[in-house]
Length: 271
Image 1: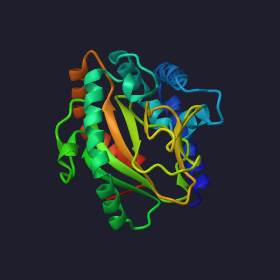
Image 2: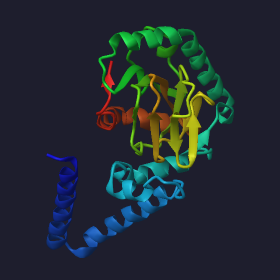
Image 3: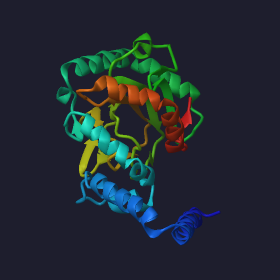
């Protein structure tokens, strides 16, 4: 079935279900939560940069941002429980203890860079996007590099995402705002065509190999070069005055998060 037809059918089913519910239930029973969710969604999507070419509102309410919209009450709560920081950060913007933890992890990655890349190349099956995982929501997956399997206070996911030449993602949203995403390019290509866009911020890996951002903002990663792109893929707990509480929430959501991320990364091959 063509992709556009599947999308139209999904929308038609949602409209039909809503119409039936409005017919069966009193108007206010549905109107109140719908208006509340609309308000949450407007507040949440307004965090994005509206001035660029990205279809921010369309994708949020009618595309791949719907799950982020459904989770907007939770994400807005995480904003209240977290310290105010930028939506795009540098390592020096992080709290000192968090920065030390990140630098320790990145030092190990730099030492092991050639071995990591060689391992991916050995397992490369030609899939457009590959993911090698070391830690997945605080659960150790691979112990081949001891520094990556140790317990961390802030670092909760560690992996390596790989794009084949001429491969990229569409504009999309991450689902949950309980962590920040850190990407670190292992072998920057000398090209302007290997980059990540977050709003109107474009980070070219050749110029800045480390990039930290809020992945519930609309973003895309692009590799238009003729070479492979290797990026460390790391989730960091957001700085918070109640870090124990937010970390506990992340652990409690662990099983759900794994399921959601398998949906979000359905186009990736895990190795």
